[in-house]
Length: 181
Image 1 (cartoon, rainbow, N blue to C red):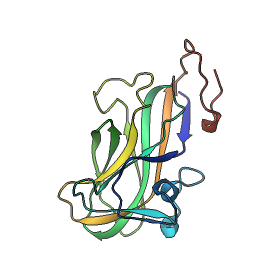
Image 2: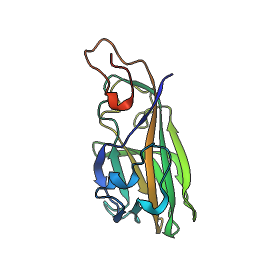
Image 3: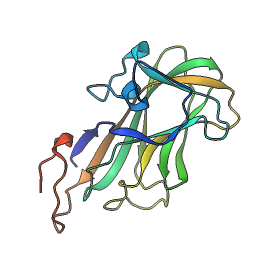
């Protein structure tokens, strides 16, 4: 299966961070040039305790991924303890709803690189289908009841996919390094 690393494209609909360091926008602070190595404390977002819309954030990664049929989506994060005892969940946001993995990241004193892989669509537990990704935004949230804050220095996405659908007249963005159909 072909695999591509998708760069963060913009802030998503959920912007529940408490501060941005080293960037003008949230996505500036978590976007690294190679999409796989964090830059430590040079740029990061502080994810606070979850209260209302605080403590949950999402980012756009999938613009231009039309016609790709995912086989798995891996969300990479680099997170460290900022204060207290934070616990962070990794998942997706779509149209007012969230779906998370069953894995919780407990940040330590150093940045920990974590990978969370979704082999099925987390909203319906079915195999991924064409265009499932378009409305989705990878997201992080502080586990409800966790008291603390975390620094997030990297969020990136690795997409494994089957060949693009050729029945539709569309090409995959060259930004992703994929041949056009």
